[in-house]
Length: 286
Image (tube, rainbow, N blue to C red; front, side, top):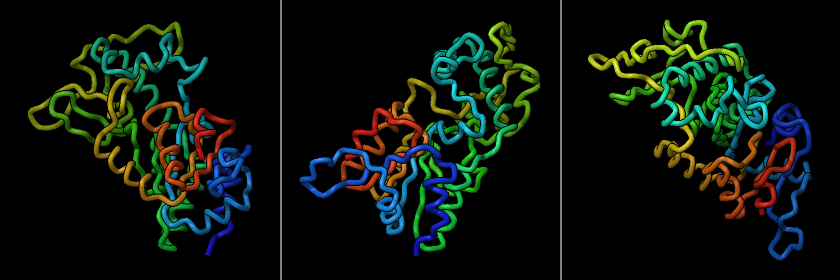
């Protein structure tokens, strides 16, 4: 039996509190097959019957928590765009600067909390699991707010701000140290007139595996890198098996995640988009 509280949360409470695009597949031959619908009654009906729900989330979910997105006109840290810092090349050229940037982001995130969107998604998973129904969150976010909200079934396709990977031995581990190393304490201020700390590479975060001491990097997927194959495979399985897909707070412009929802819609599965405005993917939900 459908719990009305879940639907109320998913459609009203905070996942998105503007309009809902519920892109529901219409009967074959319908003239307005590609036209988005905002029929909440139809969405409730489909939601109540879904047994395997995929929820694709992006930066918009975390906006209410005050998480900087580093996108658009204001998307700068000091004088650099995030896309110029979040690359393997930038880390190779200046690991101190890149670690300052990520140290700043980690310290900011330690002051932020899950918002009603994260909590509603987590509660949705918890309640539906008691009915034998499955909810999987496929998130592009690296802020770990879904996990902190209580979500259990999460695929972090772009990695995690609070994990590190060794450049030498490849060991990956969770790390919540604040600061992550002594040399970064008090560093990372985002103001444009702040000078680089120019921390010697041996004083940057180092691997603690026995006999290694290699340079650590954030365990996130940088621009120009491919997604971790195991996680991408898991995401593909989720998208291939779900019977309802919710797209929440994502602009659908970063690939391959931009193709996830259209891929689901292409096999006739309902896709509901919860966003403040239309996105490039909106009209591709047939």
